[in-house]
Image (tube, rainbow, N blue to C red; front, side, top):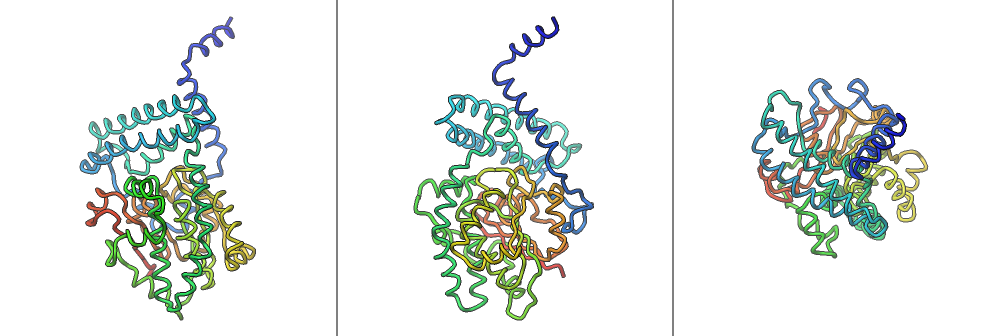
Length: 399
């Protein structure tokens, strides 16, 4: 009798309720099975664990920011829902319904956050852009969309790889040391324009199929940049200066960003004798490159670059998962294996709006730190004193 009642009760669940229940259970089991995460005491790079706060903004206490970002996410979620449906509609008839359920569930949760902010802001923990972005990825997975940008990432990675040899030759043709490093840094910044999670950048890419690295180099802010420590960085990279032992680079987007921006920069570090650890997302988020995708990219790079091929063989160029569930970076939630690898790091490079601007912009670390990003949001750029496509090049030497 009890079994019959249980079966009947389960039957009464709506399709959407059952789907949410199933995926919440699956997500909980997955989170429980993940590798142990790094606690404060394990992280070798945070200067003061008791003061580390990754989030640049707190929507619970910054009403001006809250008035902008909550409506902004309401609008953005429409785009994410369309992308989710598009990614599966050819193979799954339920894609449209699930995308709508995802949108509605996210908006309900967003409203809960906003209501709490208005009612009891002073007693709430910090609410940054990070949490709202992670909420998006969590709900996409709950409704059966683990990686809506998968095919787009594949296409963009393949297209960028075809241009890698040409880009490396452009760099090698620059004989003057300082000029070459300047071009490499600008290349990372221009590559960071290729971010489908930023509406200003997405509009450009949607309207111009020919938009590439060189066009992006022309689009970003000219020097002096909004935050411009390039000269101090170049002085550190001067010939005769001791090379860093190990650089950890927390990377961002697929395609042009990782292939034509980050990899030439990493290659030049390898040339200086620096070991390089590329830290990529463990789980998919927007069009950010994942650890597995980056491993495949480096395999393909072996055909284009002997330096990177040999560095891979010598374990001087490594790829590690960063354990993150979204496009931002919380150094409190790194996998233990990555924390162990970071103990020898004396140069930390954090790239992109999510990792270096929405989070970690004001965080202090125990090694030389370079934060690179293009500000692809007008409100945030103006809050910092600039305009859309302003450049963040923040170099903080340990001394």
